[in-house]
Length: 290
Figure 1: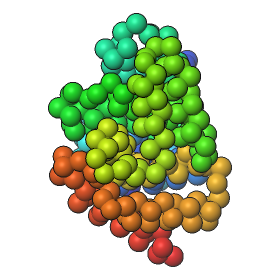
Figure 2: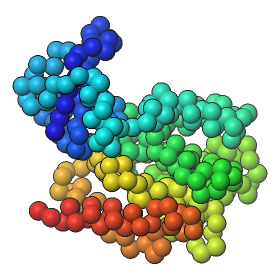
Figure 3: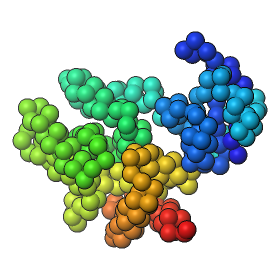
């Protein structure tokens, strides 16, 4: 069901309401698109809608409730996004993380953060970068080796939704780090970035295991988090027709299900493996069901 609170929040010369779903982000996107709500108005778990749309959205089926009740429903739905994952907070957290990792290179950090914040990104965004870094923290006890952390920063630094993205990101990493790190460390960052194209590190590749497990951690997320991931990926490929996307996505899900193992570290298997199999199998079944 779709809910809306009264227009109250001031910005840009008007006041705004919040539009949410208690079921899924996909339902929310579909309702918004069908009723003239701009895609840019989406803020991770809700749409900010101007007062002029309030009555029209109610007429279209949005249930009017108080702001307090809307917040309660959103939390209860499991769709609520924590404050630290919102754009402004994410940028602040990532800036602090970069400065701790490479304290003498604020300019490079700003460039990377700018890349991760490009407007065409939905899943492959700064929020994903922070999630990967936090997954590495979980895997290493906050002792992530520098090449692995840098590879996380660079692994989708170039993102155009093409098969060349990983290679282009690796080339960018090596170009930017060439004069900042040793030759060996720079090469290692590039190697790790390239691994994210297949997520198939060799046996004994500890650094590769860490990065690949962290990058795929979302697969083992709670069902609502996984649903947001799938929705974000679909929006990243909005230029692809529904039929072509379903065909391509099914191939990706099958490839992930075929990875043996899907997670390589003992901690990754413990944290994410079982739920990942459930999430992927459920998604594939939904794609294949007419």
